[in-house]
Image 1 (tube, rainbow, N blue to C red):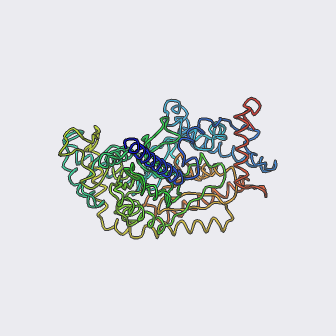
Image 2 (cartoon, rainbow, N blue to C red):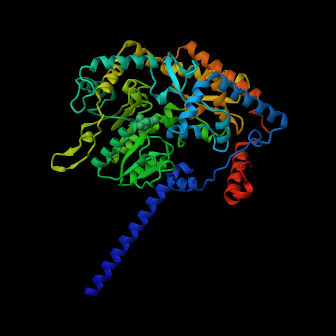
Length: 561
Ligand SMILES: Cc1ncc(COP(=O)(O)O)c(C=O)c1O
């Protein structure tokens, strides 16, 4: 009797074990299907590959002819490259001198200087075509360097500059006046905080707000709250999405520590929804709406512009549909849906991405422009998700502080920004926003096509990406031609142009003319010469051969192959 009971029990346990193993294998299979097929979708492999990639550089003999261009074209490229270098040296002497003197002392500058263009070209370009980092003033849509040279600003100050620099200068000046009597007192709040909270809850449709010092911190706090309230471990981010530089949202190269509690999944994919439906360890999903322009790809930077494969586009209806589905699954599974609006917040609509795409999130993070020109991060959410302690368990808390959060000057500048959003002129601005920026993008694309130039733009409202339509390894140099025409880009170059909304049609026309002139000059100098057999695939194959030969036979490969 005992023996047969034991046999049945063992059989039962065995069956349960087998069922659990099958379920586990299925769950792993689902997870692997939901990963985008690229290094970006596989953080661990990407980290390993990044460590194996050898450094090598093109020298004078090779740099202008990696595509096998004929000597006449190579000579034209070389001559124009040095023309640009001479132009920059003569036009920006003081700016370049200070840049030269300080680069070795500022690690951030060393990094950005090194990663403006693909690494094979970078040392030569840095040596001969240095770019100044310093500016002295701003006015309208322009910034002026130390030599008095004015650039049209398309850096957008990483997205902070939504309404024009003069507007933020006013915000800061008024902020200084309004909180001057209190000064930098931290801990107790200036009464302006109360007004900010009431405005932000109204705009976001949420119950509560917490203030932080940066977008990165706001994201950290939103994810921490989601983990605390769900009791689950993992966050889901979409392949390529940027959410600041905190480790958990950056599981691949760039973060020296392996990250175990982050799933990087495919954007706009049913296989991702399947994972969300089936797994029990997912606390939250992070959405950065700017990804809708380049699904599953990192923010386009010219440092990876080794060919012309970069593409971008935006389909508002399709992305809204996707977010609705995501919302549905998150609600079914009690997963916290976080919209990271640090970049796009207030740029697309008054009510942000939630309003623009017609989908309500559980938590929303804001930053950048919200600070009225000063540093800020904010999380808005429903009361039950924002709460940092449990009434029935006094020691079970969700800790979040920050010395400078709710700094009076920042709160006052943010208040100026938030109050301005209620002005009738801003309502009008939002009503016509997409029509204005879509028209501008369409017109520029028509001009570029009509002139036979291999350059196009894609846009999500006032956020633009340049892409290239002819296979070429030299597109990265377009940023220098734009600079020569007086257009300032951030260190990621033509991967992202950020317009402020105070660009009038006349300002925009001036920039469009400069983009045309830059592309024409680059075309004339032969950079877009293309071998009839050229393709992006061939370019990538050549680079792979170079990498392998430098990896396997470093001594033989030298530095110029
Ligand atoms: C979507 C998004 N989240 C978070 C951050 C991080 O913000 P911060 O640079 O203020 O830390 C950024 C910055 O670019 C961002 O674009």
